[in-house]
Image 1 (spheres, one colour):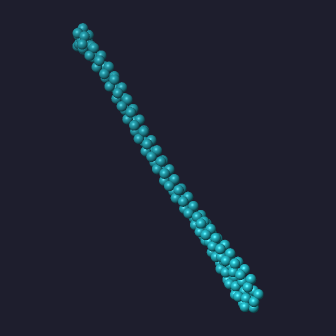
Image 2 (cartoon, rainbow, N blue to C red):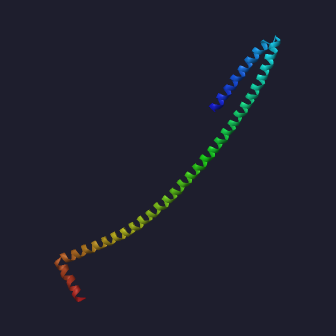
Image 3 (cartoon, helix red, strand yellow):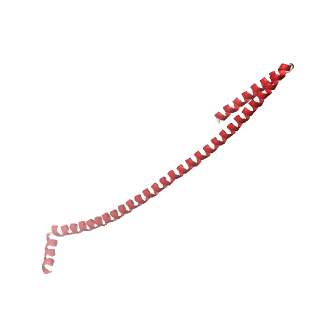
Length: 150
C-alpha cells in the first residue's frame, strides 16, 4: 500500500507543476509570441495529462495485481494449514489407537499377575497350615496315622 501512496503523491505533485506551468503560460498570453508558447504549453499539458492517465491506469493495474496476489496467498496458506491440521489429526488418532492397545495389554498382564498373586497367597496359607501341623508333635502324629491308614 505504501507504493500506491507514493505513486499517488507523485501524481499530485505532477498535477501541481502542470497547474503552475499553465498559470505562468496564461499570464504571458498577451503577446503574439506568447500565443505560440501557450499553444506549446497546452500541447505539453495534453501530453502530461495523457501521461498521468496512463500512470493512473498502471497504478490501478498494480493495485488489482496486488489484490489478486494477496488473494492467492491467502488461499495457499489456507490449503497448507488444512493439510497440516489433517496430518496432525491423523497422527493423534494413530497415537490414541497405539495408547489404547498398550493399555489393553497392561490390563491383561495385570490380570495374570493378580491370578498368580492369588495362587501364591493360597499356597502360602497352605504351607502355613502344614507348618502348624508339622510343628505340633501330637498333630504331626495324628496326621501320620491318617496317612498310614490311607
